[in-house]
Length: 493
Image 1: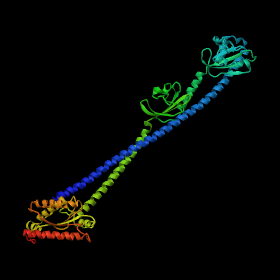
Image 2: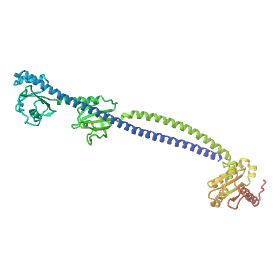
Image 3: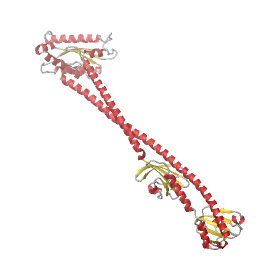
Image 4: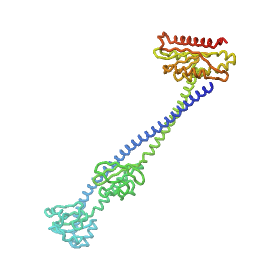
């Protein structure tokens, strides 16, 4: 029985140790998981901010460069106007030098080809076309429409030379640029017509595509520049997408407002991206950043932190296991130093320490217990038989009193019970204890009897805690004398 009790205690201590380890391991895993999730969230937050900042810079940079190109384009148009005026004057000089070509359509067409222009018209002093490289326009005059009327100031000031912006012509509505001048003797006007829209569109197209293509971007980032009206992509870091519409590749153009940056989630070529879109007067600029752009770096960083946390947790678990082991050894040593080896009750050392802590202002009970007839059992059956009633008495005491206080073996067959809880139930405890003693039967010893005396701390005003054990011992000895007197046994035998 004794060894079984000790085994149970050892098992409980080991179980508690293992459970503490398990709890710590579970806690460590939970902390690592939470830390990794938190780290992933932080990485995602900063990655989104970086993606937003990078995209904003790219959008603004593209628009800035394109705006500068627009200014260059306007400068180019102005230079073209001056060039076209010069060409009109050159044609005028040629016709003045060769009067015979004035009505020769084929010759005028050759001059147009030579001067790299599309049309030549000769107008009289009233502003009516009477000759030129295209006969179908003969008869049109400055009153024939808005495009023609633009040149009416030429009738009042024969020193003027004018060039019109790209404007639909009166006859076909075809976009043209016309330059006009008076000849040397001011008898007629020479007008030249050029179709610059194709050239200008090509310049614009090339400019947009070149600007976008030359933007420094990392793999996973794409830039698109599309026409505001048609939504057709005019420039892209991926040349294969030029000519397609933004909606076709997966970028919705709904809810886009001018000069306001719109952020949305899109899917391009099966890849989920964050998309920043900004609309200007002529272009829609879109920058997409793949979700995987930062993922590789984030995963690598998360892996590094994860490994660090795992190693740190292993070190902590190792250190904790050492601490638990040391604590277990200390508890075991403390348990051994305060525990009676035979009965597993507290020993005298623990008794001396605990009784010194008792407070006389609180209610507690001191119970002194001593076994009867132990000497006769030792003399008759040996000390092994004598140990049986001692352990049995200790078991009865622990069974009945341990939930309410502590049980101590302070001598061979001398025990003390300190009851500090539910003292009002002491009579019931004592009756149960008496019944368990009376009903006990051992293998070597048939029966068991004890003598006891008890004292309440609240019985009177004590000068010292140590007065109470003396009174309890006196009552116990009185009970023992009464037992031997009533049983007729010789106490010395």
